[in-house]
Amino acid sequence: MGKKKREEKLKRKALEEWEKRRPKTFREALKYFPGVFLRTSLVMMGAVALILLLAAFGLPWAQSFWFQLLVYLGFYLAFQRFIMGPLAPPRVK
Image (cartoon, rainbow, N blue to C red; front, side):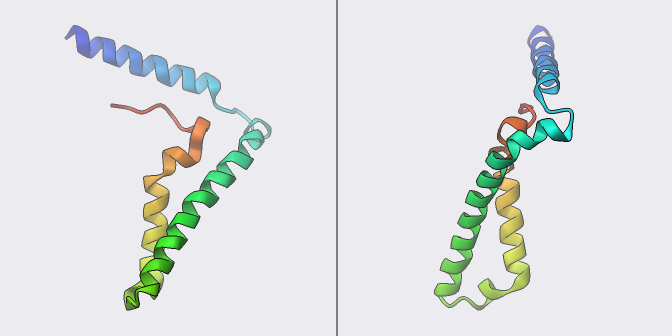
């Protein structure tokens, strides 16, 4: 029980620190925009490279709108913590 309580306390403390750190207004959030934009661009370039590679192999479904949408969505969800960077909430284990 002691270990579980300690973990809960650490989670709560990390969440409180993140709440203090995160931007409260749009103006404060603007300073994070270039980093978020560049990280998003980097991740989406990887998704485009994958789609182009699969299309170059001649796979017909690689040219499908729905496949491309799933690839973009998958990359975004997989790399969301990287994209958000300092704005991301702490990990919950």
